[in-house]
Length: 204
Image (cartoon, rainbow, N blue to C red; front, side, top):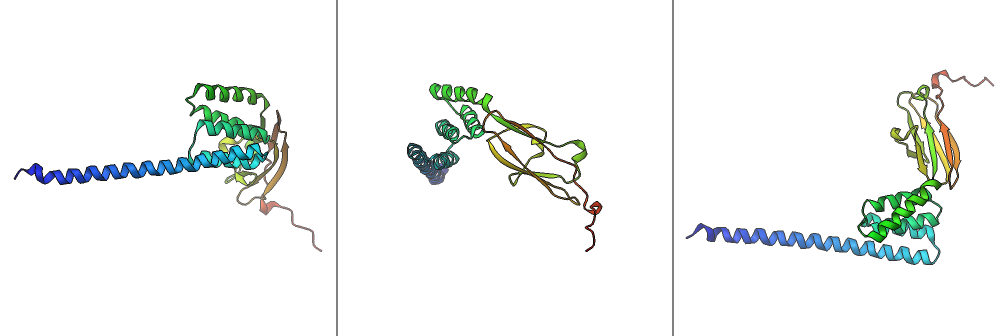
């Protein structure tokens, strides 16, 4: 008997398995798209109701499931209404990396251009004298990557708690307020006191 007859069932099995995998993947993508679309619609409805922070959360969740230029533009609009200009600017910039539609590209480009002069910046300055071994900084409780030290970083307006620690040294924190628009705030990290050199409290 021709060997090709023995190989035919195997080829059919492989082909069928491939089709099943493709269909399963397509179903998953459609399910994710449905979830993203539902959250997008929810965001639109919340915006119309004036529930801006909740709308922003919905748009952001939709974009996490399926990143789309249109969703990012709506998220940018929402962040603007919520006076989070740096977040809005970032959303529009991200939209430009994905957009294909000419009208959406024009909208995102215009908003980026208009927002850039209004952005506020926060600089966490770390002088050489303050760079002790193991130094770690935080901004509102989140680690601040050393690549961001000594750089003016666009941030939303509001209150920021800058903290720092290093092995064998006293911890340090300070709080600054950044304006919603066109603010430039700088914080200088001091040289931390060594714990073994701290002056002991006076005896009772």
